[in-house]
Amino acid sequence: MSIPRLQLQGITKAYPGVIANSEVALTVMPGEIHAVLGENGAGKSTLMKIIYGAVKPDAGQVLLNGQLIEIRNPKDARANGISMVFQHFNLFDTMSVAENVWLGLTRSTLAQVTASIIAKANEYGLDIDPARPVHTLSVGEMQRVEIIRALLTRPELLILDEPTSVLTPQAVQKLFVVLKKLASEGCSILYISHKLHEIRELCTACTVLRGGKVTGVCNPQQESNASLSRLMIGAEPASLEHTTKLAGAEVLTVKGLNLQCEDQFGVDLENIQLQVRCGEVVGIAGVSGNGQKELLCALSGEDCRSPRGSIKLGPLDVSHLHPGQRRKMGLHFVPEERLGRGAVPTLSLAHNLLLTRNDAICMPRFAGGWLRVRQLEAHATRLIKEYKVKANGPLAVARSLSGGNLQKFIVGREIDAKPRLLILSQPTWGVDVGAAAQIRGEILALREAGCAVLVVSEELDELFEVCDRMHVIARGKLSPSLAMAEATVAKIGAWMSGLWNEVTEVQDGAA
Image (cartoon, rainbow, N blue to C red; front, side):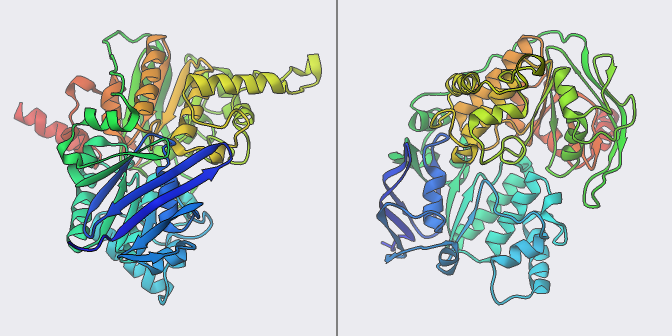
């Protein structure tokens, strides 16, 4: 038998009020694609950071190729052939793509790194401009940078945390070909994903964590989605009921929206036409970086340059109004970036409510605008309980939560406002199957209550599950509306390349 590429023995890590990992054991063989599965807060990310040297364990041993080693930091990890793509990216916003990648490499010039990035991007279909500053990139494009940076180190062990969350179905399959090729060459891959069908297709081994402990080891190709769910959360996620209903009056109307991007690396919006009615969910699919960021900024009010009359909430023109004014009219927004836009990392969950909710603020004419702290903390406590957020109380700082748990809190905060129109970007990115089902159920409940909902997502399964109609955005243009009864993965995938006119013409000609 060959020597394991990686062995973890008795790994334990505790933080104040929570045990992230408890005596975890994990074995990964050379050339093996090994899944680590668990609900949000199960300890997956902490375990991966221990392997990568970003976190030091309180107890336990790490063996690499049969040798006991101490990984003191990520530089040590890379020197030992370990690379990692984080779910929350480690990139410097003010630096270019090439400069960020260059930081993790040695014995290379910036020109050599730039050429290597272009070559890897072409090889794996992860298009990116090495000269672009990171702050101009969408979340999906940042993920491409992280994947390319990891591949350039030629790792023996590659750790991927939610690598396909912002890829099209076609791009996912292309990435799987790459990963299988890497595995055939002897590279071991640790693969974290909440997409059970991906794990069953790609991985040959799986370690399941629950509450920081290993609860099972299996071959996922011999399991079903239901059995993997039971191993992960102790039950199968609740099934969603999406009943057919007639939509009501138009709540959001976007007509002839043309908007030139101020950022030279951004995407111009061209003649956007969009309507969302009360009591319906409308989805927008597309490859990240095709104008989603610019459209959402225009709709949320972060960009107030939209032409007068191009964005209406009901009969009222809101194109020139800032986010606070739009919120007062019932428009609430969940951005894709949890930390930094959805929540302030260093503030408590209670104080993060104040970003979009003023329930606990005394009006000036009564008490000079003082904050009712007890009411604020009680509000946060209620949301934590209602949305099953794993957190050490309302005073826990936002950055202390796992990505999925923070997402549940942010989504809960906006839904709890009882919005007239709710816009969500990547609502279940990096969220486990149980939490994803909960969030999607809340979206459908809003729909039933008469709210208008717009969902922008790269998760096609999600859009197919909750939407009544959908569009595709490509290169700043929005496709015609498509009823879900007419939508297929193949058709949406083709439209993501901006081919909806060609596809429609071919179909009309065939008819």
